[in-house]
Length: 191
Image (tube, rainbow, N blue to C red; front, side, top):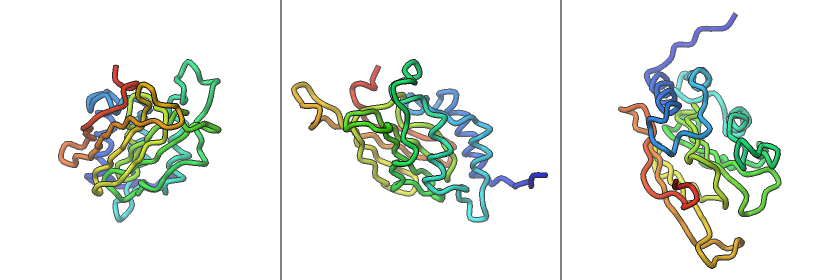
């Protein structure tokens, strides 16, 4: 049989955060690609040092299948997410907040991308309510904050060289047990 794992306060907070996010309470940036609460809680079973159980590549392979397809649920036959060529440089299963950037399989520069957010290895959802073109710049600001600089074409820009930028900051609030979003989103994501 399975072994019983004692969940830490942080793991419980992560599970509570996943439940809140699944209901859309944390704001519009977290509604798409949510992890089922039971899976989020089980995937965040803490080790002795309170880190998630998976490295970035393992987390990507596990959670990419729950994402809405790159071009939307109604266009699932038009493309899929690339589970092999993901950017895990800002993922750390021991950090309060980290991320994985996912690209469209076989895509071009303007093909859809998404940023998956994790709290100590537990999948919390995506940074936006939909996918977006052009690979963003994602940076760790602190162990609980990630900054995403989105790129988009302004009027008159070529698709090869977009000049528009929108900067968003995502933070894990340990006291509230949830993610917070501040900043701008690309125009195509504002509805």
